[in-house]
Length: 438
Image 1 (tube, rainbow, N blue to C red):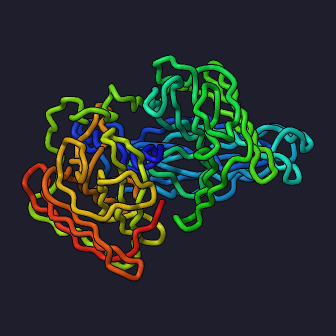
Image 2: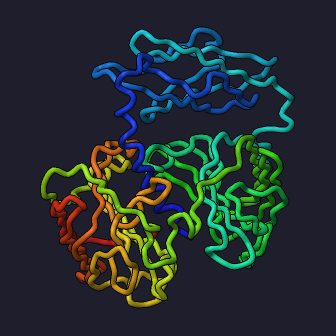
Image 3: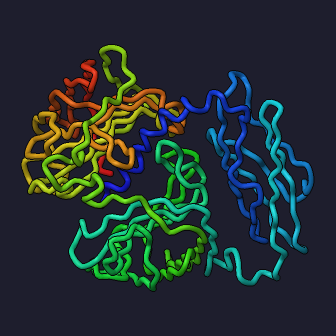
């Protein structure tokens, strides 16, 4: 089930080509929402925007036009995101107008804040209840891939959504729900009431207790808090989710209004389970490399392993190993995603061995990189992230070669990669250090 996180951390390769058709667009600034609502208790709202045909040296600027008394800090933590702090309201309903400008283009965003209600029905009441309004739903529909008799839906309800690299933003709130529903064959979350399942039976209308949790992201990775649910009930109706969760004795009431469609990751849609996991695609080359490349991980970095179960249905354990450079808590520069099938069924990180790259998952195979029907990068890839992990500046699908992972002693491991991308460029890496369990 952890594969959800590894896929989300990859992002969509299709986004790389998006600029080709934008060069003749006269308008540069596109703001997705121009009217936002804020609770009386105060909250930080998020404005998402896109820049078409960016002009070098130009930046996005903000200005409070009216309602200055209700607005706190305005920050831009990443390209495409503006966060506006709305202060607590102790009076009648009010609004503010914030201008967003780029070059000579200006768009106004209206922020409407609810009236003060005497402290009832919102916020954190002496630690007993927290109310949260989610604006984003991101996740996957797995069908019956993880058990017969129920469809599986795994998704985030959050205030920030995910960036272009499929990563969470800083200072965000992310409720992750791993739910089972009656079999419908649809990637739209079915209506119904879902109850917390402490035994994790995978029965219809249940919420998996082992995987469901709250992520509170900080300024960097180390500041992120992870809190597991103690209890939960979820009510799904037409374009609405109401989730009530108990965490450390506090009740969280989470509401979401919007579409309930999730990305389809079933076996029929490139999710694995056959000898050709690409689903018969011709594996069109995906690489920006123009020559041989040696991958390095220096200074602050992180290497972690993720147990994926028997994801490729080979009878052996599957692991994803992520090798990431970091700076100030953010992923940047070289990142290697290694997708391996071991020669055992251990769940405890028993992945030492030598792996041959192949498109056919089997024992001791490094699964070659490809993009599935949803333009997601699956298998083994090299990525180059811009600082903050908000976008790529390079990528390459690894399709041939050999990987060796060995014990270097004193808790360290050595990873040696001698491989090549789909254009024949050599990709090498020789690293020794600690591989952490995710």
